[in-house]
Image (cartoon, rainbow, N blue to C red; front, side, top):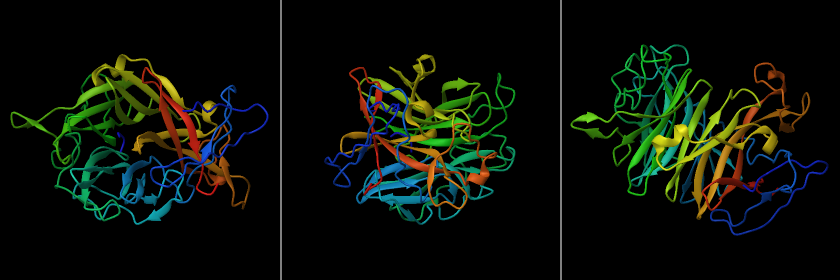
Length: 376
């Protein structure tokens, strides 16, 4: 899902790798990758998982450690005892497709535990919205590693133009509305407030793109209703640039929105954040970069998710790595001019990185350190 520092900067001559052992809520220890704060550009930290690759990760805490789901066929899944792993491939998450979906290629699924059940929010292809058009559904399981079965025979969020049963939230902007494209809905992310209310954030496809939020029922399986009708979604922000992967967190009296900006296929993809007193004021709040190539050394750090582990804020995100040479078994962060379609001979893949965040007194997020792979 997505609801759920250390400023890493670049060394000028020597990469400094510090491994510090400290109490970890899930694995017994934390291994840290840190660089001196006085430097301006960062060498890339090591990914915590290369196999399995985990693009657009959603991470949730389980009784046994952590579970991750990602973009891919039938929702790829992995488990680990802690942020640094070791991450182990688990069976795919989605047991079957809903009747309205046209294929199993799922984008940016979100896993969350609500009311002692496990829910999987996913965006699946649907007819009537073009080649890449998608709508959002929800599936349920008794276990984070069990089979998730779609609920209902209609989407949770979907434009009315789609060739699918009418969605619970069909307030996705339609053609003819001011300055908006013909598109679907992707990147579901659940936010739960202190009162126990659940909200679904998502992104509308195409440009200008919007990030939206709609209230859910307490169990998280349907859009909440008012006077017998589903409540409409609210636009949080709009941009002519590509914006996606919204994740909302509450910090005292402030709401902090993390999101990705740019083309995920290259190294310019990045993670930004905004902060406001209410979600509806986020659009006018200043934007700040948290993760980008120059700050981290990672190629295209985005698709981030937040997890609270033992009282600390952990961020998980993906970045591109490429083979170091023909036939090599080693991978490193792809070069700065990388593009996935132009550089396919480098066997590029999106892999999982993990970082611990800290917060300033004014609730500004900071990267405290990167995790390194278990045993690294």
